[in-house]
Length: 259
Image (tube, rainbow, N blue to C red; front, side):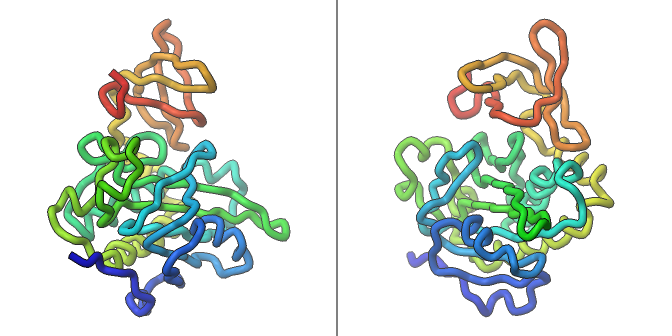
């Protein structure tokens, strides 16, 4: 069965300008080369050759995914954009519900998961161009990706919308929903943070679970108690002290090998 392809004409009425690429190294890297482009410019492709994730990791981007990055030029300093990744996760979650009727959960800080398996990853990068701050949101969704296309080590922890629904998903429909919801997010970014962050916290599978906070070679057990207004994970250590985690990695007991 042939996988549907992204088409430029499908985005003629998009609220943000969208450019469809047959293939690229990384939609985030491509947008970095286009920081002169207007606010809201988006690139979307069905295959990346050098996809990137958080903490300098590679992001497997085989044929069948929807890989989309959008360039934002918010009128705010970086210190007021700490919640951007979290709001993007809410936007993409809404888009997947709109398009597919599938309701993913959010794994702090930047993954969407379904049944404990990774469905989507988000990478936010802030860059300066001619003194102005640009935010690049990169989103990769396993849309019609076949399990055999993933590297062996990824197959057990990844899932696609095709696998969940049992049918092929039109990537144009999904990408259009994503752009529309990201447009809404952009409009709400500095004015409706409280409501969006409450939605994030309610959908976050990490909250209410024993976790391990990974920093370098250290793995510290804790309990995830909540999410603060900027998207930080609020944890309680075994000694009873509390902290707000803003960077690093957190693994959840029972997910992806943490037992």
